[in-house]
Length: 301
Length: 238
Image (tube, rainbow over the protein chains, first blue to last red):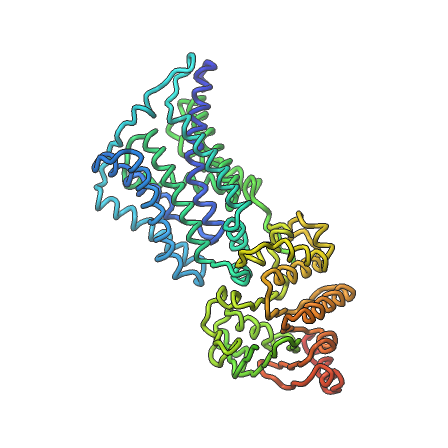
């Protein structure tokens, strides 16, 4: 059943889709970068996001630190967590079959989820309100939360910065080299471990930024919050073409818009909101198995 | 410069290299010839630390390389042009050259100009992705990339593989030019004829062992080697 809607509500929904899509994009970038360099789906990424949400929550609601201090600490701790996971759970398996690495990732994911449940209890915690970010402001007849505008802007600049890093800096060049060929990259004198660590640092840092913004928009924190979000963002990365940063952003936006617009146009289907991601995934993979911006894997002999 | 003593390497129970001794004097061209599976590539990959060795020693200017990290070995001025070229397909030609000098911090302009002088084709395709180059161009790029690190010892694994004879000749000319500029060369080839012509000294490797050695000229005139090579390539085709 299609509901008639005014231009205002439609625009409002578009802004909503843009902001949630940008959040998906931020987290999807982490999946795509790690996959690009390790050929590993980092199943713990969603839980790294969850831990970042808790770090922010503790900083602001428990220790009453100023927000900028909290955000800084959150990002640093999340980066340490991500890099630490790679160091202790993935690096020892570098030469093992990919399946072992995948199982290790799933293990880390369960570990983080259960650790969080044990330490922080399974109860959702209310994230404090950021009046500056959440009090709606009016543009004519449009009512928008500032955070919904902030999210796409942050994502946009992060993407630009990241593309610059990957395409125009030495470390980015090293990342692209490592992602194709470890041995040859080593022959160039590239320190593989350093490059992989920086990839995890970037991915986790973005998950932290995503978590902070997420909590401002959806002010509730719980130990299993990373599961569905992680899965969706992984799907976003696959839709866009895993391994491709622009693809991850595109996939995230497609997912965000489709979800929001489906709920707006077909309110009766609201309960299937989370299924949209999977339907889109199936459709896109049927026709473009490498995702929208993914490259065909051609091996030149 | 480089001394290999009693090197043994095995992969999953198969002995690929069974105790070989090789010496590469400063400023020379040394070549290892042999059929597929003789252990040539394994030897080169052991030198740069890409393969775990079982026993023996590899010293470079009297420093033990075994157990050292690849990046550290490369930092000492040893570089390898791997078999099958292995240029980075998504990087442009220019970036591939730049990444060859990854460990250097000084200006690269002169080196790049130099390489473009040697291989004008690369300059024409400077902004093209390396994956779009032809095999010969990729080989030029792989050699150019290796030169960017200003190596003292340049090792090449089958630079002529799959290339047209004219291009092979060009590559070998470049190898000689580089050698005259003072770069020591360790070359692996199945194209024994070409390799022996430019080599100061050569080793023949067969199933992990050195069966013959001598100056390039000596081996070139050695009838048994010519015969052995014909024999080998026939056996390979079975």
